[in-house]
Image (tube, rainbow, N blue to C red; front, side, top):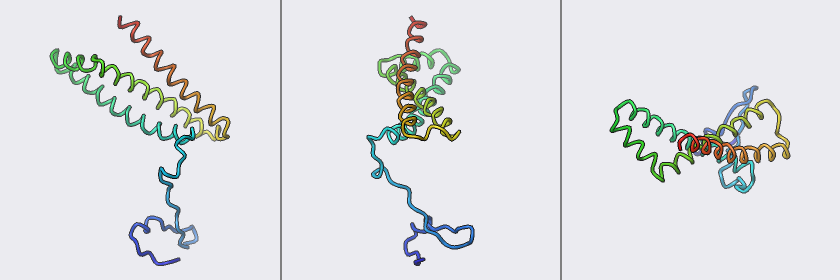
Length: 148
């Protein structure tokens, strides 16, 4: 094995169980993925929706703190979240939460060792997308019915 001249290469070097040195492969960068491929797109979207879901939880904490702080603080938060942009944001967080949940269930299915063949992968991917749209619409329909 050649001598390491670049410090970045140090993390790529490991040892086998017999002690011999081995060079580990680098993870592929986003440029290596086909973004139009369903599996890549759903995987990246799963990570993005996890981030959106986390940001949505910050707004939930803000709403709860305002409720505890008093009527004026609560009314201010209600005004923000009840505005057109606030409702659009809440819809986006709802869709992100449903997508992230359904994609997580899909990953649990994969963790059981099933669903890796290509037809099943595409079937479960479509199910996640359709389920996200249906459950988001159902959530907001129920909320609007109870709200009005």
